[in-house]
Structure formats: structure tokens, C-alpha cells
Image 1 (tube, rainbow, N blue to C red):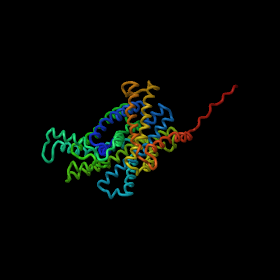
Image 2: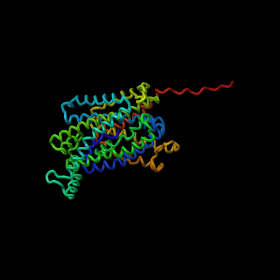
Image 3: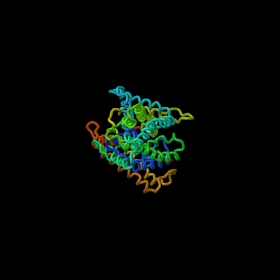
Image 4: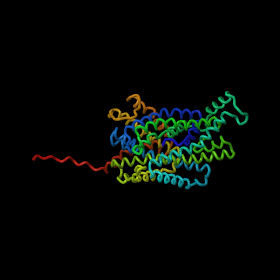
Length: 449
């Protein structure tokens, strides 16, 4: 739900160069991923409810803010989920451009949505096992690419083994090399997007075995694993000598050809990277559908969405009930956002997701204040001060993302203004949702006998 391998890093390299990209990928996890994973670990272990972050905010801040959390998360999902079918088509076009030309690309994107909806109807266990398989397959070509890239960095194809001074000078030159169209703000935004999504795993808590033990462990282990899957491949292609400004979305295919050479080996590695890119798009969409579909289900159970959204498949010994109505509704909503550009989708997604994430950090602090006796199998060490400080880094990065979104446009509006309008519609949506709730009858009047 957070990462599908190095796919998606290409634009960071192309916009910032190798040196700055490596610095970003090393620092962002400390300011963004680690505090968020700690927050999710504490709240998910204390309140393992179906609906996750919506339930946390509702309990800490009341039903109005709980609804706003769900509204922001679902609105962000419309733009976030459209990114992954786009990645699928971008990589497919690298080897079969005729298959993705014109409306064919949109048809492939719709096929990804429908296939993932069908897999999600099989339940969380099926999605989880499928995600592990996807991840193993898509990382396999990068194991080869990293090994060949480091080998090329240590050995010169022309003169043999480089001296240590030559190697250090060569690597330092590549890391400092400028790019043709630098955009530090754009690179940071894409880095944040690549490292976000830690709270998405919380919404399926009732379908996870022993969540009080497993959520904190999964959060902390995954934070380190994700950073490694980003930094190691980027370092390998940097020292292999590929110019940074050749990287755009989908460029890992070209990197594989460059590193492995123009022969049969290079062709096979490039095709494997293309397959991995397609699996990345489909696999990320599949895992996130599992998460997001549980949010309207929790809202419907609270009476804030139509009751038919509470319909689920039958439970069995090996499968928890699946909210099939919500899965199908979300799939239809996400299909409507297909066609927007990669950068525009990320800008809108970050603004809406950032607002929902800040509400979760507020809920963390408020629950510490209001329910100090709440059982917390995992607790962020350092007391209330540490809980407050945990949200500082993410807040600063979200503020930077707002600044970075100022130039992206959706029709006549900036992406920031568009996202602000979507967020501002949340209170109105809450009022409309409340109209459907049954009114409490006044208490009966007691009369004297």
C-alpha cells in the first residue's frame, strides 16, 4: 500500500539529479514515513476497527471531524488511484505503443480497475497474498539491474578496474551533474507521494490476525524496507553512468537497456522491467482498493451513507466478509479520474491526503489527553511531547507540498484551489449525510398520577 518497488522514482531523478534525489530519499522517511508509521502503529494497535483512520478521528474529535477525515481520504483516493493504471499503460507503451495509442490506453486502464475489483471481491487474504507475489516478481529484475549497475560502477568497460580515486571522482561528478529542467519542488512532491500511504493499512484491522502485535511491527519493518528498495537501485544506476535528465516516468526500461547493453541480455532485462512496471501499477491499485473500500463501508454502518453500502459477501472459515457494494462503487468513482496527467494527479492527491493525515496526528494527541487509560499495546515513546512532535515533520512537508502545487492547474483553477474546493465541500456533504439519520425522539413527558 506504500510502495511497489522503485517504479515512480524516475521523475525525482529527472527533476533533481542523482545527488539531491538520494538526499531526499534518505531524509523524507525520517521526517515523513517514520513519524507516520509510529502514529499508525499506536492508533491501530489501540483501536483496531474496520474503517481505521476514520474511526480514530471520530473517537478523538467527534462525528463531524470523523466524516471530514473520511471525505478527505476518499477524495484523495479518486486522484491517487488513477495514477496506478496510468503507470501500467506507460510501461506497456514502452514495448507495445500501438496497443496503448489513443482510446486503447483508457481501455487498458479500465481493464486494470475491473480486474482488481474482481480480485478484491475474494477478500483481504487473497489481496495480501497476491501483493506479496506481485512484489517479488516486480523486484526480481531490479536485483539484476542493481548487480550489473554496481559492477559497471566498479569496472570500466574500456580499461578494466578503476582506481579508487578515479571511482570516487567519477561518482562525485555524476551525483553533482545538473539536469536540463530542474524542479526541486516537483521532485519533493513526488518523493512524498512515493513514501505516503502508511495509514491505509489501518482500515482492514478486523481482517488482520492479532493487529495489536502485527501493526506496529509491520509499520517499522516496512519503513526501512521501502527506503532500501528506493535508495539501492537509484545508487546503482547513478554510478553506472546514466545521465539523470534521461529519467522520466517509465524510464527504468531505458536504464535496463543502458546498464545491460544492447544485446539479448539487455532486451530481456528491459522486458522484465516493463513487466514489473505493469505489475506495479496493477498491484498498488489492487492493495489500495482493499483499504479505501472499507471507509465508505464504515460510514454506511454509522448511517452517514446509504444502507446498501453495508452489504457484504458471506463469511467463511478462510475469508472475512467483503463489502462488495463499496468495492464496486469505489471502482466506478476511480474510473472517472482516468486521463489526468501524472503530475496533476500527484499535486491534488498530496493536498487532500495531507489534510487527512494532519487530522490523524491531531487524533493521536487528543486521545492521549482524553483517554490516557486506553489500552495501547504499542505507544510512541517519549510521552505527550513526543506524540505532539511526531506531527511536526509531516506538517512541514505538507506545507511545502501546498507551495509546490501552486503551478499545476485543473481547467481554469490551480490544483491547490481545486483541492481546496473539494475539501470545503466536506462540511456540506456531512450536513446532507446527517439528513438521512433518524432523529431522536424527545423523552416522554412524565405526568403525576
